[in-house]
Length: 127
Image 1: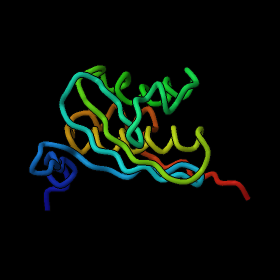
Image 2: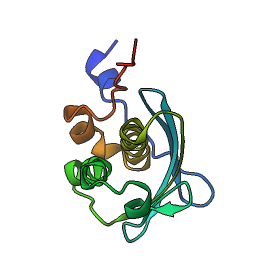
Image 3: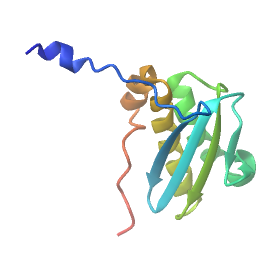
Image 4: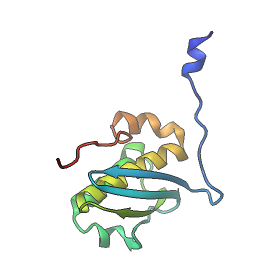
């Protein structure tokens, strides 16, 4: 059996009928459902603009990290609903979801996102 051929599993893009990719992100007690689609970089979280929902600049930076690492800033619109936890955990959950959705939308971005550690769920929770 040719082992090298099995290693190079070509991942197919996963998109729904509307051209969106969906992923679930988690961090602490927060769970985020995230949809991404090609667009202008608009981010809507629980029906509010990102700047209104995550007022702290640090949280907005966390949300932008996956796009910066993948080199696709302002190319995708994000629609997310997030429940549970505090604002910091929710920002981490949305970041995790965005990273997973980006990788599903364009599998070629997986390497960069994985190297940055964005596809791994941060399993630390309050004991």
